[in-house]
Image (tube, rainbow, N blue to C red):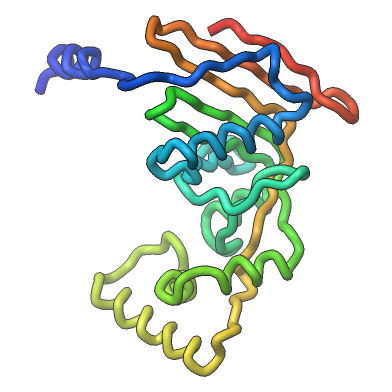
Length: 219
C-alpha cells in the first residue's frame, strides 16, 4: 500500500460506535482518585474490554522513552498500583528515573485517563501478596528467565517454565526478591471524554499544595 492509500484507509475507519457516556465536569469530585474509581467501575459494569489494562510509560535518565501495556492491580488514596520484576528494563528505568505516565483507554466509551507522577516501590508484603495471587503459570513464567533478554527458542522457554514450576511444588509460597509492587503517586490526572460530533471534554486535576486544582482544557 502506498502512503496515500494508507492515509485514506486510516482516515475512513470509524472511531467510536454505540452511545457514549456523558461527562458532567461540574459534578466532578474534589480528588482525581474518586473520579478514576468511578470511571473504572463504570467501565467494568459496562463490560468494556479489558478495563484494567493500562499503558505504562517510563524513560531513561537521558530521556529515551518506552511504553508497554500491563494490568492495573489496585487503586488507593495514594495512587495506582502495578507489579513487575524490578530487574527488567522498566524496573531499571524506574530505579534511575522514578517518574512515570499511565494511560487507560476505553474505546467503547470514548474515554481516556492520563496520569503522570512519581513512582516508588510498595511494601514488601504487598509485593508478596500480589505474586502469590498470580496463576501458577504466570508465576513460573516470571522466574523462568531474564525479562526482555534475547530468547534462544520457544523450546528453551518451555523448558525453563517447567523447571520453575518444580520450584513451586516444593516451595508454594516462594516469591522472587525481584517481584515488586509499584505505586504511582499522581501529580496530574486528565480525564478525556469524546462525543459523537468530535467535541472533546478534558478535565485536568493538578497537585496544588495539599489538595487539587481542577481545570478544563482546550481540545
